[in-house]
Length: 176
Image (cartoon, rainbow, N blue to C red):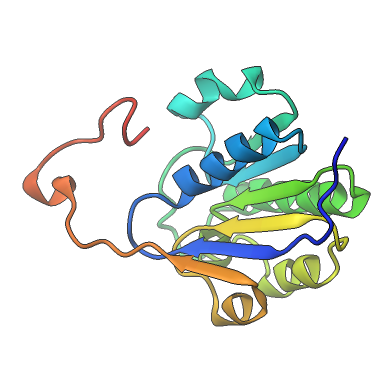
């Protein structure tokens, strides 16, 4: 099984569409090259996302979701949401430290930090202490500046125009 010579840290952030889609595209490309991918989704869960219909058929790709699949608006957030996010963060630590996976994707981790579901310091430690061959991808709006500074690649998706603003609803197979 091939290993990456050097794993980098990528951040996909911004208010535009496509952060999770970019991460899934990377997972698809990586598995096509025989790399092992583990994706942990924060906040998501309990919703019928299209990618869940195919992901288990991809070789060497594992996905675990930790969330209730609903918007979190309570300040402070509900204990259940904090517990689920921290369960996901603990799994992320275990998976990354194991060095078994070439690419680890922490989908919506930036939002989990922004909502105070997980501690920024713990996420930064995770990034700083990852094995050198592990590529780490962190997605979600509102990436903290400290994370942007230590990342090797940062892409900001910027919304220029969106059909929601004209009253269009989410479409199966496109937005979810």
